[in-house]
Length: 602
Ligand code: F6R
Image 1 (cartoon, rainbow, N blue to C red):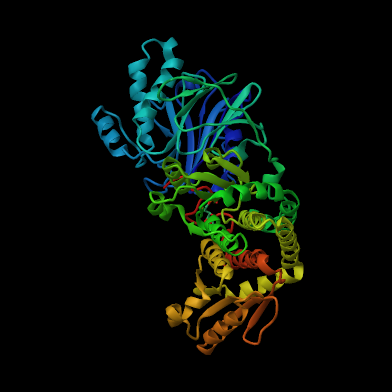
Image 2: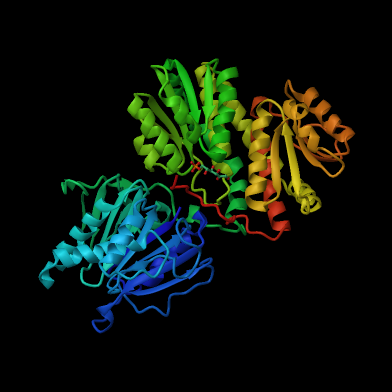
């Protein structure tokens, strides 16, 4: 959830490099930021200089920090302690010679804090993180007898501290005496970047792209000492040296920029037609490989969180109807209840954009302990989920920076369509459908159509509640559209199964209700129109999303009919509607309140 960027090297501009790195990670969502530098000048080197603030980085500068070639920074997503300047990271020890940044939750922070207070440590924030700085200070006193011991003693002190922390944490610590960054990971992601005469640490490889493509993803319980020239990795418990597993990042820095678009979300929405064409052209082989694995399974469990969870749910329709396989769907947090009774030969197919969602990693770990084979579809190659799974395949969406997931959803659904048809030994139809989805999505994104959706958004901007209604696989469409609307425009939107209306939700449908009804040309079309009429009879205003205009629609958004793959253009309509509603209401679609791109806490 938090963004981390650290630099050590030849350049004296480390603070501004760190700030730039943090700005690259801005999309992950945060509520405060901070940068710390060890000044180069001997006079100033006595303490670490820190600048930290609550709020967005926006146009922040760090020109008031002294120059230095060792600096790190952090964007915070509050867990312990309110959103204040004081609670922002980095945190210092009592001597102000040690600074720490942290991602995760120190579960035993209260006990540690009380012990440290008894030893005379003074705390200035309400965070769990601050205990780390004071603990390192305490261990450093114990380990460094002579000044020349400073460097080895420092990494030893960080190691001892890390071992004292309960919970899932990633930490980076610097001090004024040792020219190095010392980091350790358990649960929360950290990646080391290899440069020439300079090295890096980050929570997300995207931040490293302007500097290096050679990286090592830290595994759980790995520690690293990063100096200008060296990267020394070892096990935090045994101390055993670990050879770096160097990986090459495949994305480019340009791909991660907004380009001509005002927001990442709009850029990513518009990338979908091209992306879908590429998936249709390139992904059939990998879909067939995964389909072969799935065919061997006695039962398939599709698992994902949030938008990826809705993609998983769409997959369960395709796997049942096309793949003819009994398929269950679950969010990872609910999946825990099923793990112990998973039958032999069951397969869990997990999907995730980031590959770092803690709830998923948690359930995957348990499934593996149970002996269940875990396959995954992941957008960020080499992420934690990717590395934990028995077999991982890329979703192929390219970098997604908008907090509200868009292209990762359509890419995942496209992959699942290919897979379902491959299970049925009919890769050609799957490929044809995904190619049609690319074309249909392009049609949804024409200027004329976008203007129409924008106008509908304008008419809905003051709505307090929106009911998004659909049947069959369109039930997934409406849940995903409702999620997009609520998370960025803050309008309460509910995805309702049209078949379930009469079992409860209809009670809410009165004169002031606005209902967005999805009625693709499938076996549910007539029922969906009948449901729209029932809602209209109770005074609701009906916005229809369908291939043909129906009398019952008060407003109409056309969408091409592409049979089984219609969910893809249908969801794109919902993405645009959510985006323009958000702008109409004066909010930032890329940075919704309280949310983060990568949910690395439980
Ligand atoms: C919604 C959204 C979230 C994510 C969810 C899972 O727009 O982005 O619901 O889909 O947090 O994230 P990943 O796919 O990274 O596992």
